Image (cartoon, rainbow, N blue to C red; front, top):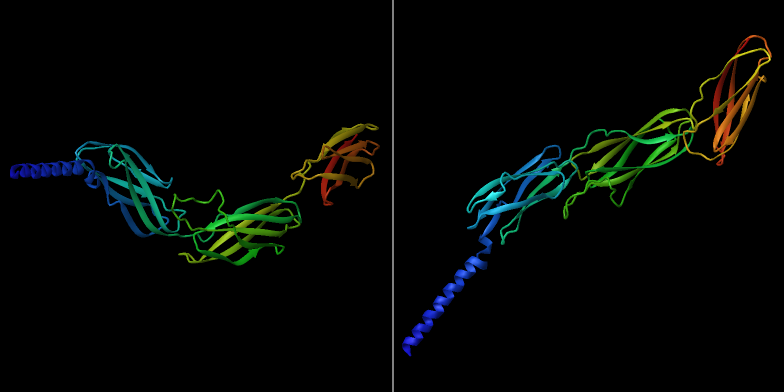
Length: 347
């Protein structure tokens, strides 16, 4: 009885040893058996957004088998991951480098990469680079063109802007036209052009829109306005947005209508299509000139003013010059003026 009891105790000890070995090699030692990164998280502290950042990590194979790196992915296009080897022998270690361009980011940020392995316990190894980006803003941005306008037309345009700041405010407007002004409004939802961070990553850029309203200048040419902005909760204090636009005629200029040489008693006719720059629904048109010898007919055909000029050589001989003024009206009641120079030579 005593001997059987000893046998039973010995058997239990052996079983426990076998179970312990199985736990060590098949589960209990899983945390120490595989591929690991040292460090797995690296904090670079406060950095500038104009300087490329680099973090070094060491990937170690703490196992009894050769491990293959199957894939290496980064979380955004601003990252570059340098993996010098794709195979690690048991106990081998290698250095990988994670580089990031922080331009377009502001505040606390995290950038990560994932290495995929064929080790059963550690199929994915994640490395994380963290920092606090101190964003810098140029004193004046590239001018934003809000388009072309006819003389004295109403302007109602919006421009999306993004700045690295908790809050930005409009500090002043300097415009070469007193009839044009701007207001600053929050956008609410980010636009497609905004920088997007990785999943779970914040990118607290101040997203606003400038609302440009007013009346375009009466004369053709470019107009410009400069908007002063101030920041709160940022590493910069002031910035400028420049808005430009162009006033153009609603219709393309018409070259001189040249009839050439006209014999005595001869009559010639020329047809001129006045092409529009902007899309307007036209209603009517009329034409006048300084000299009655030039007959004028103008009509709207397929939403295009068509001017027909007829001249007859009734003498005396010499050059004939005149200017036709065409007045065009659209369905909104807006009128446009187009001048057409005319020249002929009478024998």
